[in-house]
Image (cartoon, rainbow over all chains, first blue to last red; front, side, top):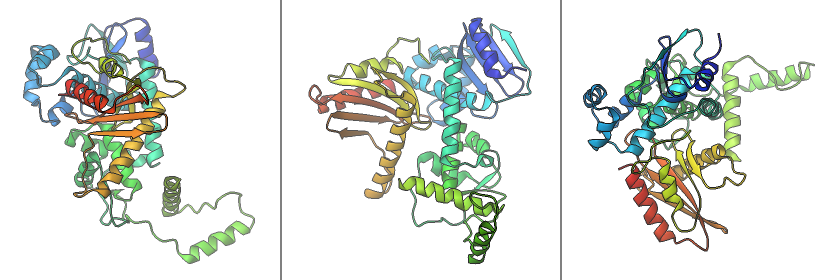
Length: 266
Length: 132
């Protein structure tokens, strides 16, 4: 089965108008071949982001969806055009980040179907794919632990330093991480975009402030002198070239931390 | 990615306004949370918009971290940032939005032809029109 972006590129070429449902994972809306809106079941949509901001209650959004649409939303002066565009832009890119890699679902195209928030900003498929790749690379650069994206996280009991500076999303994540919710569940609870929460989790994990709920020891264990001596002995005993691989997960952790620290020094 | 709306102040038409500031050389809109270049104008002159946006985001993050340590109260909300170099001025305006953000408007100004006070005033007015 072709990947979702190949399918979308095909629909763009045919200048299709309608909705492409990707199983239960989400839906992509197109107008004349251009993407107008995208939803993904894993992350909050633009409605949730708008409601979480506190200016437009969800009930008002439902009423507008049924009658009046974005035209009335703007007329009522609750949001400006710039805000609406910015919100849709954020929500669509967030949905694309989680929806584009989805495989296994059989996409169905329904011609003519549209989304009520669509049509204020248009997206092209290559642009979306490029931006999603950039975002993925940024996550890995921040902290190369992809498992944290999907596992329940909790705040570390002790801070591995004396003081720390947090951004607004990081603060919300730090106090919301209860050891039961995964980052994407947290995003829904907080009304923040999924990517913003993933990024905050990775950054907090790099600082040693957030750990996977299953991890028992939040602080990096000191390498015992005995271990170091043994590694050195292994290395000189005609072992494989390159750094010694111990297989000990805490050791890899330590190296990653070290690399991160060195990178920050430059 | 392009917008096709031409009403009041849309995300992309706002850059036309920014470029109308006397001495403006190029401008860019950046989503601070994701580090994404929302739109940009002027000649990129060998500058990759994606990389420039990411670099600006990191710079802002470092500024916020640094300032929060340096000022009383420990929490900061940057309104705008002015950096003057030997070649010109860089003016950066941060606007809080009702969901995520802040949205960052960046403009590079010509050393000789620009008036910083005017540019700062105009940029603030634009951001207020865009995101009330």
